[in-house]
Image 1 (tube, one colour):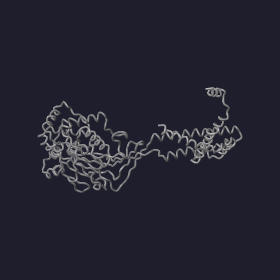
Image 2: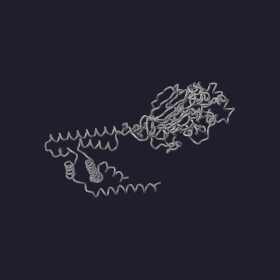
Image 3: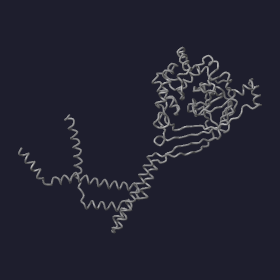
Image 4: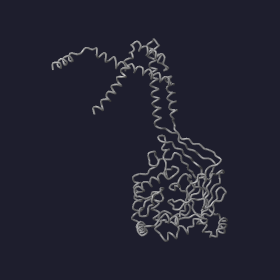
Length: 505
């Protein structure tokens, strides 16, 4: 150990020795030279007011100028301090701008039937409604009464149908989109049909998205306002049904308007179109840009594994999927990922309790920068204005009854007319911006220095040079002169007495 530490000690001693040797070769300036250096700095510096203190012979004027200079320095220090405090509170401003364009992207629209299941399938497996209510719990928070009769029946059903697939059952026995349920479809004067829709699973079972975002080149654009997507659905209440006991007591279509880059989110955003009504939806495009932390709450570098574009809703789904897959060893089919699909037994024994645990512990949160899913840096929303009118009119009712070969009361109770279009060919950008940038802070500080002291960057360099020169001289004084003064001083009596005692010993 001594052999390894000794060279290090010599190295440090050698370095200090070289510094001391270098400084020893530099002569220490005399008091007259130091005084002349201070005087020259005072009369030549670009720091305003200092030369007036030195040059004035009147003591009163010297005092006045000293007070002025000290007061100006105090004010500039206070101003710079307040500017720095303001900057480190990370202030932001919000700008709103309207952009007019010749063509604007049409959003994606996802449609679902409020009666989610085929009547024949529910008659055969009545418990399927409650099972789907449990399975869709992964998408939105809902309470399940474990003491209810339906829960006990579901447990018995699971034990007797262990290979039962809810996914396949809903896909084959839920709402479907074909020429019998989509009676009319027109986009910007061009006919469309079921082939233009993509099937997606939501809490409403089988849903269908128009203008989905899989093919970016295929995103449809609108060049004239007032026209857009026009649809007539037949919800066929005799063929499709649901459970009023679970809150599904309406008849019609629920739809959500969203960006092609995002997944459809019905909670809080779903729009209803009841039967026997013509729903006119006028939309505008609203883009929101958030600043990254610490000015805002977004994180520009965050990426999702199963989605091309980041969204808080997609992030929450991935967060739940990862926690459930880690705990239960399987993945609910309504959540993204490539894991093994959870069977019904897993849903009741593991997935459902895990969802309650995630909610209770707050493991998947959204909003702030330090949450699981911070806000998106860029969001596109479509605020809607909705109006309703009775559909069809008496004359149209007779026409449709003859055309569709259906009773008039059937048409009143099952047809839904939806029309979605833009109000104007423009979009609004709400942008969060930094209130103070680094360049603006430097400009503000420089302005305060120039206003109160007439100082600039050159002045600061002059002051640094002056302070460095004085520090350099102080180092020479402490390293050279003080040791010389100590060596010249005569030894004290106590020191001589101690020395004699040592010699006697």
